[in-house]
Image (cartoon, rainbow, N blue to C red; front, side, top):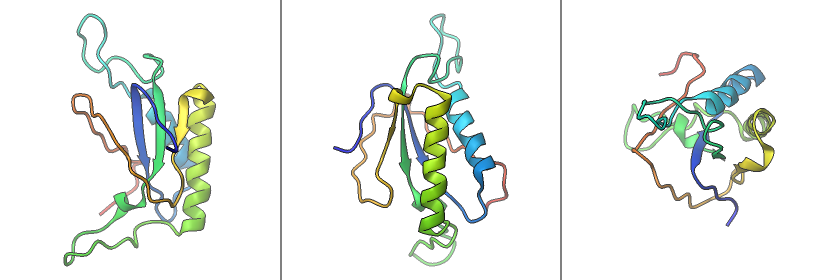
Length: 135
């Protein structure tokens, strides 16, 4: 096993051509600040992963940027080249660690085939975007 977490956030991260440290900074901040848990009084969407002292698992996932507009085969040209993606993904993970408690932030293995198991509470699955135009 490469990594595992308890209650928290599984952040699949994809790097597109032209993404910069600025976008990675914004995404790291969003992952840590996003209000995903209810409060003790039943108030919805009140607590972040930091508020609940949860954990974060970051997994590189270039397939999120696949285009499926044509045919039956996904097109991955919307993903950054592996060298740039590796650099910016590791930068993103470091920013998440720096913004939280380093020991509570885990990482997958870049460019590796991995089995990722998830117990999705809710279920809640959100796509966080940097505001750049996507297709």
